[in-house]
Length: 396
Length: 124
Image 1: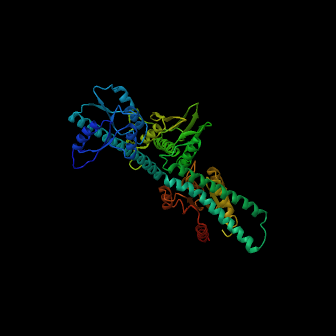
Image 2: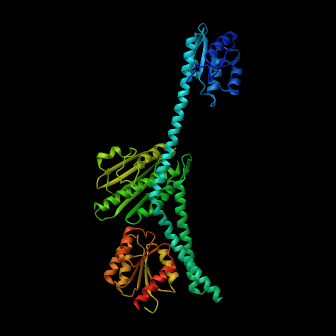
């Protein structure tokens, strides 16, 4: 930042003072430092000037006729567009000057008259630099937030990639019986048309059954598509009052093919009030945890840890007056206590390459924190794992 | 096997059973069941010519079922009908002759008719 380089008159400074002499002295001083300088001679004119073209910094005299400096400062600080303009108060040593009131009104500093060239120069430079830095910081924070959002979405899509073939099968199954039913309908309609006779009793019964099949198949497919849409939309900015039961059910629909064959899933879900949340993200959390539970169970079955060979997942959700608790408990392989502390660390994974990015739980935690909730894990090797989520109903 | 082939169709989705039964009722003598143990019982009765089974099912996979069927009657035509035909278990079952045919879901009616036709010819 080359403030004093007169070749680039980069920063603009507005001086508000009703004393022509002060204006002249300061203008000359600042212009020699390479600033673009404007002046205003009353509180009202200062506000007008800021509104017509916001300066990078404002030097503000306290005592002006009409609106005084404190008032001008308060007005500007209460306007979102202008509240980041640094305001430095000007006061004469002889004047009654209330420093506390000046800072309370939103001033960042003050300079006393008579003006000392070096002091004015350094104070202005410092505050311009501070402002510049805070803008950079804000931009860095915004960038980070965007990147985090992208990371969450990427992880979600990567997880979906692992589920794709299973979901394709989930859709293929109803497609199979819908197609067979349609072919069977076609055969019968051809008979009716070619033989020019009304359907007999058997055919009427078949029609009824075939249409029931087709309609049930379409309902199944619709449910899957609906669940996928809820899951995959990038809901990073969309907060709504949602039905948690529907979010849980959609997650179960997406995970159905992984759970259904060897695992019994028991649900204890009481009636839940609407929760203020980002549904796509909560769905991501539930799917992630169900996926972890399924992996742990498959591992336990392979290792012969489960006596009757049946995996079990208990999914419970219950609401009390202002929060909802969701727990997902499995009888899978469990987690060794030596790694409990690392579970939420980004990129920590115990899964083989290609099965997980190590971001699952870390992202779950970040999503739950964004909803002002908490997530904890209780686990013992060969016994199983229980994940508990607590969310306020007011969520995000 | 001059008359209609007796086909046993097994799937864990009852609408698959219903649609299959209505579709092939005129072509085959169709039996269907959702219950693996019942399927084994039906085969034991000795009337089945063709068995068509899903693979991914609770209790037992289709490949496991076919292995049991071979023990009972190895002359039955064994077909896996699955959406997971790339599954290594299914591929191996086809290579080892545990399944005579592997048919993809959704079902291609012509493929199933020609498979059963071919089998009938070979029995003559």
